[in-house]
Image 1 (cartoon, rainbow, N blue to C red):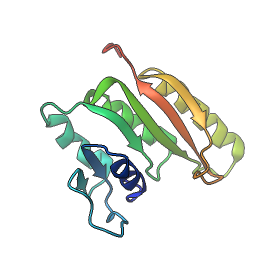
Image 2 (image 1 turned 90 degrees about the vertical axis):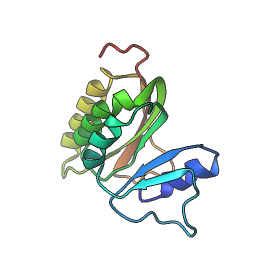
Image 3 (image 1 turned 120 degrees about the vertical axis):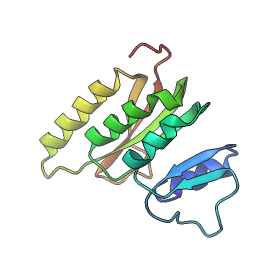
Image 4 (image 1 turned 90 degrees about the horizontal axis):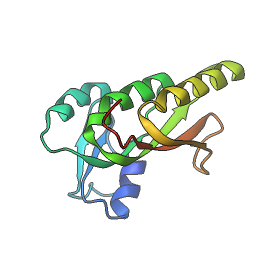
Length: 146
């Protein structure tokens, strides 16, 4: 939800259902549109309830939380059952490390870990990224075998 940046972007582009998960209020000038369900909690707290929902099969998973890449990837792997095979994935990796070599090693380790549950893993630097973050684009694996 970031808190609300990606949510606003997705709603403006016509997504029919958005589940925004963030413990903070969404920062929007207007109330969220009806397509937005805001769960005001951390992702790790929201996942158990989401995993119990019947018929949830998302086309897109977008995570811009302020956390170490290891937690971002761990929570994504837990959320994979909520996604359609081939669902698009957008993850932000935040550099929470004081030394560049530690950051690069952790980033690369998590990219390797991500490849076990995702295809077409690409690291990009978006214009909106700060110098201490990067974006990972991929797709949830087509196969249900993990």
